[in-house]
Length: 147
Image 1 (cartoon, helix red, strand yellow):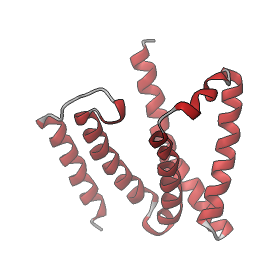
Image 2: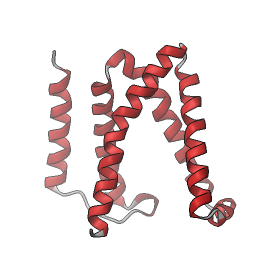
Image 3: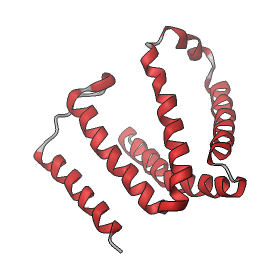
């Protein structure tokens, strides 16, 4: 299996996991009566999983964290915002609706990051085809909202 195939399958699995994460954490937030409590539990479990993985793969790289540019740590705030917002919004707006808008935001943001090579990403200029795809996705989100 090529690296490209492995990467694609890994990200496909991650994509499958996002709506499942949203549904499970939203249900936990309702059960507990607090999306923030559910988010806190999610992050505690995630921390245990990542620490275990770090110990298995070798903890030495974490020692380099203090020398990393501080703006890179903002990713933690973004994941917290995602988890807390999806946990709160999904039970009221629907898992599908919430995830569709997350996906639309991801497509727009990813296109901008790739186009400008932000945060060290490979530069991949937005093409008419890519812009049309994002527009098609936006139209799809609109259609899914029509009841």
